[in-house]
Length: 343
Image 1 (cartoon, rainbow, N blue to C red):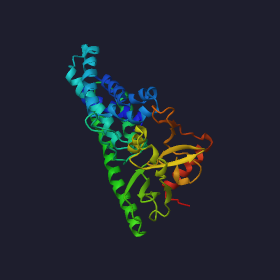
Image 2: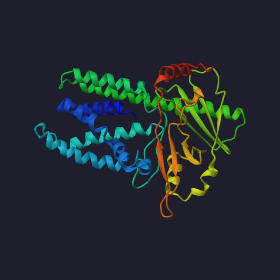
Image 3: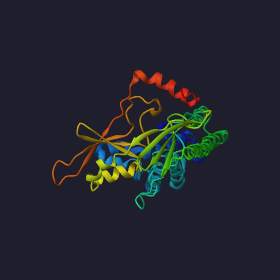
């Protein structure tokens, strides 16, 4: 989930747990510590692309990490604010709930988390909400701004914080129902067209929970389609992507290839350009894919062959180029497609 949502939810939880005793300190600590699991981003940037691939949303997004972090930071916070006479246990509980909230809403996104590391690398990705969804963030934003305008010891602050958390949580529940309905639409369409498939991955597009994308695994590749909850008919067009798995066959013994297949959950395409191999994570596809233009893939990795007999294959993560000149047009296209305009 985006940084702002994590901070706002953490601040609201801080108020709910310790706000009556320490006022805005609870809000600020909650907002700040809520970002701790994302320390994997700057650390990953120092590790190299291959190591960062599996480190992101890894150990720092696990129950073990947040539990240890909550206890350690809770003890430190109780020393820093010794005058407030709040024990380290209460600080730790507050911070643990804040950190747990970070894991929870990240699990609702399509990227997901590895909650049980280091004991299990099972991946949890509910994929019912976009990483940026204003309708989730708005109740928390209003809540935290209002909190900071009220006097620190007012009882209404806690009621307000609980209300904000409840509204945003109810929206998360709504996204689960919404996704279930969309999955039924896609499944019925595929059955009607007599398309056999192994599995299907459905997720919302960016900034909303109205326009959804499905990638369907078939024996010879993948079909990608879109459906808005405001469409007046089922999905009409599916775009086919070849898997091109044959390009990976000579490299299946490479650890980085196995990592790419695991991280992409097997939804991938390999293309060859100018004698080099590029790996596309098809769970995310191309930026604003329904436009069917030349947008790049959101996650693309260039495979770097071993330099010596003893070295291993490496990867280079290619940055997603953003065309600022097309942003206003793209925003309008997104809105139009959400509203069910398919032409």
